[in-house]
Image (cartoon, rainbow, N blue to C red; front, side):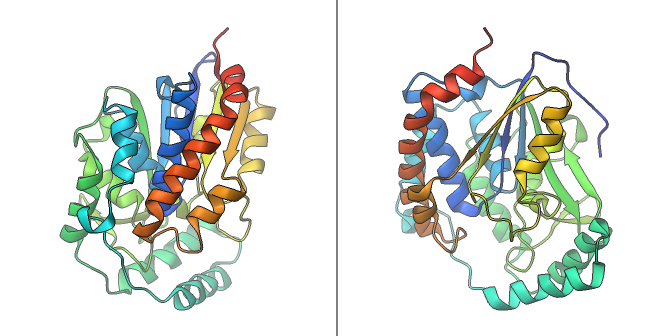
Length: 292
């Protein structure tokens, strides 16, 4: 993990995980805020985990937000998104067994989940990569500081990827979005990597040293998910002097996201709900984000 902190007066946007629904919701939030005069894209640092890695790459590409938002409203059959069949109960049981085996050792837990991911049949890496590539308007790293989080499937070690890492952007995003048991682990330099959300749903700690931090949390306060306790992560930053604002999905957004955020059919309702929520939050976010 990189040992880098950031000078005070910097502003960081943390983009959490949440499937294709989370991508759409986050772009909706950002669009609603922008339409109300608040642009979070001017952050000094972007931190993307899973769905958030895709959003980070998209908003740092320079593509207008209205175009990114409009893409979320395209009918599924006209996109390259793909509904994947998986047994949710089996997935949860596999993760439960991993927890039971690893106990409080977080790295061992991630390795146990990684072993499950490596053993589970999925679509090919190439097919999955094509889906990820279709989401990114530019497939080269932006100049804006962007960190993408993933996890080594064999060792459980986190890997924080940036422009200096020599990793292709599409591969970095695909790795961060590789939900264990659903999508294939991604091969980078001979290692296989899984979803960065296995370390934390948003990896808020990577914003250490920032003056102001906004966290987008599509999954709401779902404490049953691994790494979902963002309030505790945010509290650590606040004790170190950062100001932190968590934007979690409201009731309407949670209803739009639904029980399966990996279902591409959730994209349009999640984007629209996010935009409405962003508009409602604009005054609060503007006051928090201002450099004055």
